Length: 141
Image 1 (tube, rainbow, N blue to C red):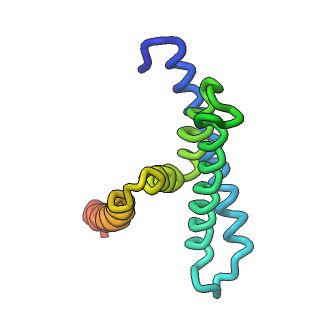
Image 2: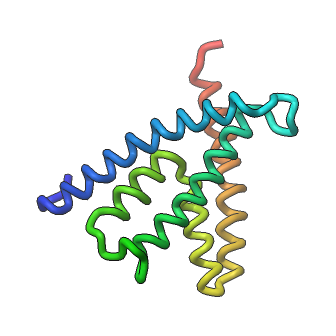
C-alpha cells in the first residue's frame, strides 16, 4: 500500500478510473455488438472488442496529448493516473500498448516498435493458448 497521502490519492484515482473504464468497456462492447451484423467479416463479439480497442487507442491518444508537455491539462495533478492508467486501463490495456508503440515510432525506433507489436501479438497468443490448455486440464470433463 502507498506510504503517503498523495500516493494514496493517486491509487484512489486509478481505482475510480478503472471502475469507470470497466463499466464503459462493458457498455460500449454491448452497444457495438448490437449494431454489427454477425454476418459481417467478424463476429459481433470480435467486432465489439475491436471497436473497444480502437476507440480506447484513440482516446488515450487524446488524453496523452492533453496531459503531456504543452497540453491543455499539462501538470494537472492526478489526471494522467485517472484518465490514462485508470479509465483507459479499465477500458482496454490495448490503448496503453498502442501509446507505447507510438512513442517508440515518434522516437524513430522503428525496429523496437515492430518488435513490440510482434512480441505482443505472438506472446499473448501463446499465453492465451497455454492458459486455455491449462484451464481445460483443471476443469472436470
